[in-house]
Amino acid sequence: MQARRVRALSVTLILCASVAATAGDWCRWGGGSGCNHVSSETKLPASFDARRTNGPDGQPAPRQNLKWLARLGKFAYGNPTVSQGRVFVGTDDSTLGGDPRFKPTRAGLVQCFDEKTGDTLWRLVVPKRVKIPKKAHYGHQHLGVCSSPTVDGNRAYVMTCATEILCLDTQGQADGNAGPFTDEAAYMAGAAKKKPLKLTPADADIVWRYDLMDELAVVPHDVPSCSVLIVGRFLYTVTSNGVDGPHKKMVSPDAPSFIALDKMTGKLAATDDLKLGHRIWHCLWSPPSSGTVGDRTLVFFGGGDGICYAFDALTQPSDQPVKLAKVWSYDCNPPRFRLRNGKPIDYYEGDKRKKASPNRNDGAYLGPSQIIGSPAFHQGRVYVMIGQDPLHGRGKGILHCIDASKTGDISQSGCVWQYGGLDRTMATPTIADGLVYAADVAGRLHCLDAATGKPLWVHEAKAETWGTPLVADGKVFLGTSKRFLVLAHGREKKLLGEVNLGSPMHGTAIAANGTLFVASNRYLYAVAQGAVLK
Image (cartoon, rainbow, N blue to C red):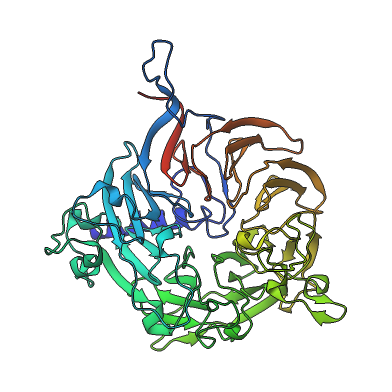
């Protein structure tokens, strides 16, 4: 029986870690380890009824192409993930899943839903972290859990708004407390009423916890938001280390920027040796990706210094933490983005909120940016874009196509092509059938030839866009602050549908098991062709 269970889990891990997502579960951010948001799911509708309307008789009309919807909070910035009949999503605690035992603390919540019905199976309450270092700009915990849970077998891994990595039992407390962490009641007590909190089968089961602040002296900026990467036995993540409130210097410059943990125990396995804390402009937010290049597995990391890095993936655990071996680096800010008249351009010069800022918020401003979305890996190449916090305003962006087989500083030798026709971006490029889709914050979806970088078409959504395009079933799905868009996948532009979700969508849609999952700030929608929700 044990051997059968191990074989079943091994199959699940292989499916979840595939470079290109296939039909079935969607276990992590990006679907596969390459963070290329492509699915082979079919029969996905181009529209659905997100909002309730009344029929001719004045009674609420059935909603078409909608299986179920579930209430989230006020914010949802990652995307849901789906594994073994369960849907996992991070949000804020403004609703707390309707649990009367808790009182919101303006912090985080992870919810687990039944994939078929949308019923809540369990929830993880993440209390607001109160003790934080001086000078830290850590005032956005109310945005909740911004990362997408990564599911690996019967474990789910998530970075929370409390600057920690948690390993969770996907069954919650329903199958008992897995341990070694057994103090869930005290962990969640910050959100509870005065009387002691009694755990129920509807509560989360924390297997282990790794505190980035306590263990590594990490001091985040705004709120941590990385979706972790699992490769073999190891978990990879950026640390979310960032600058102080005035945006002038790092609070903890010597803290590591990129780490690996043993996924089984939560033990620190490796750290980077980049000393990146002395060059970070704002914060570390880019979720890592990985891919096989030749005979080696590489892990790709988008730096807060605007440089994309590749490391050798770990193969064996060590008694003590080791240093990750850097294979190559690629500067995503060409000289014209970094220098003006031979002098460095200040990162914050183009912040539209500053007095006398040269940035007119029209997309023309040229200055340095960092990597916020993931580097996407596809067929030996890495596709990566740059941007800044949308509050800084619009500005020139750039999309790079990198030959991942090179070594050393490959800023010149590794450049396959560059495309500079887009604005700053928060998103990850998506590559499918010889095409690249890239969304910028200004709300434009760009379609390029993957071989040459030649632009084929641009769709103007005219709404701020943070999410990444999903390609599935001959369609491109993209959420914006105003509408959910569906376009035809191909070399010619064709808008197929628009859906008003009633609230902004900052995350990315996913497709799993014949269903499209769309998370707005308020609701999670399970969308399926022919479904009717009464």
